[in-house]
View (cartoon, rainbow, N blue to C red):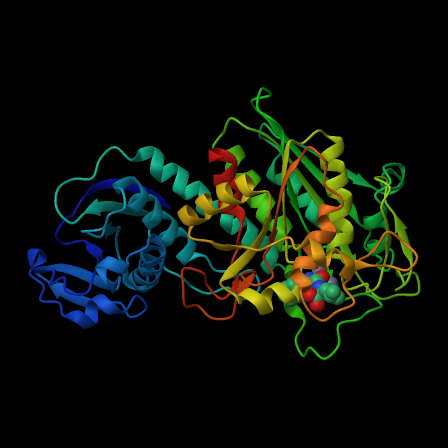
Length: 471
Ligand code: BES
Ligand code: ZN
Ligand code: ZN
């Protein structure tokens, strides 16, 4: 797939995004409000030898770039089925968004919209080699860098989707580690995998406890990317549970647990982000940490009630083995501090409670204000919605344990996402800036109604890369 900049060329298949009220008369079209309304109902027109695919952006004064992402994704999915040659995608007219951002959004919408996970159900698809991004009038120039960046952003996002969609029997913790080793082989990043006895030596006691019940052992994956050592070290930490059955506290009453293969979604996000940073050869000082394990019930499993002693001095009583993500993230947060990370963001499919609170469109974000502000800025750019949630000090007592410093769950059926964030905070460094993203909600979609096709969304990869690049 190659993107060019150019101008409208009669005779070419052309994707035209329009607002309500736009008639398309400069192309000889006579559009009505219907055509401007529906992003998910592309309408075809043959006009003066040009085949147009018209997609709606809704009301002009309510425009946000995500509507363009969606419209281009839907339009391109339709167009590509019939494309016999290259296609042109036109930018919308009359927005208050910069031309560069529109170009970025169009390229992302196109690449993200084309994504399908077809490893286990191959389908015949038409491919279009060259896509020209153009203006509705005049020539579009000077955005070559924008195109490269947007394409890499989308690719990083799709790396994350590939990993999350992969079934657990094909992606065990060591497979994830091997994937990461291959992904960063010929880059400026270095990969280290801590496993076996080294986990014991390094007192990765969360991973050892959570991983005990599985025949597929746990690991800590570490990727270091230091192209500018003068920058303060940033740590990106992603939960990497290749499957979460709940362990001894087995998940019951759920008919279909297949999406728990995506419990490595946080790791997908940070791996995708590192893909973006390394491919763009960004100036950065980043370490990525992925604690990866499989949470299974077994005679050797971690038991409810057992105590895990962490090397930072915090002893945790396990109330429920299904609250395993925070136990392995604790190892990574301790390591991030040991490595001297000045700021750390962790991202995890952490709690069903966050999904209940914010639904499937929003991730929750907790943490220090400047961190949250920076993340919000990047989220506005990438169109991944995050909502600032509070660290309520009073709820610390929800995590009370009668025998250890803390429990890994709250005893109450409320504030599950907040108490999880409070738990994680216990493992961050004193002088460290920290933020936590709970992506249980936007982890996947079950229908193709946006630029995300059915399945994993890859939420967080673009967001975190953009944050590292700009904050
Ligand atoms: N991986 C789950 C959270 C999750 C749920 C992610 C649904 C995506 C969709 C996590 O490990 C978990 O099981 N959390 C429990 C915690 C509880 C036992 C305190 C939950 O949210 O129910
Ligand atoms: Zn769990
Ligand atoms: Zn989990």
